[in-house]
Amino acid sequence: MNPTPNESWGFLHPECFGQKALLFFSWDLAKTIEQQFHLHAQSAPEVQLYEAQKAVDRLLKQYQQIQANPDAFEGQHITLQLEETDADEAPILALHTSPQLEERILAAQAQMQTPPTVN
Image 1 (cartoon, rainbow, N blue to C red):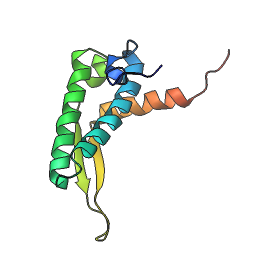
Image 2: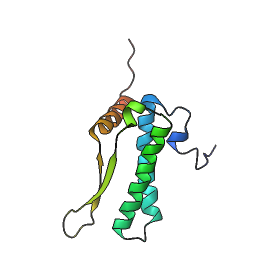
Image 3: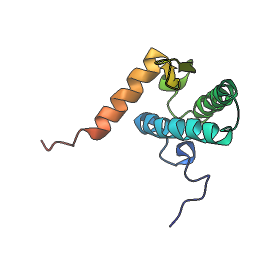
Image 4: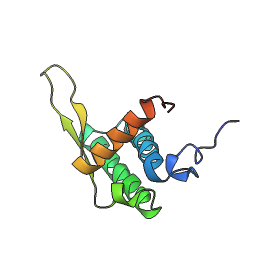
């Protein structure tokens, strides 16, 4: 079964709440940024960054609106920035995530990677 474009978004998944919402959000975040840079590939880097930031802001607002995990998403932010590297290399995209949201996402990812134990 192939998912439709809407089904491939984590915030539309019926299990997108609590700790799982953080994992869905991280997947949606990567997809959102990739999509925006692809859609605006012919634009100047500043335009690509601007459009990607708007999309990230909408995504975060979507997770807040569906109450996926209010403690994790309310009042949080992610700021995209192009950071210069060596003079002959293209700038890299940096995500500056509010500390609380970043900590929760990393904890959820670590929990997913830890195999369950039997007591």
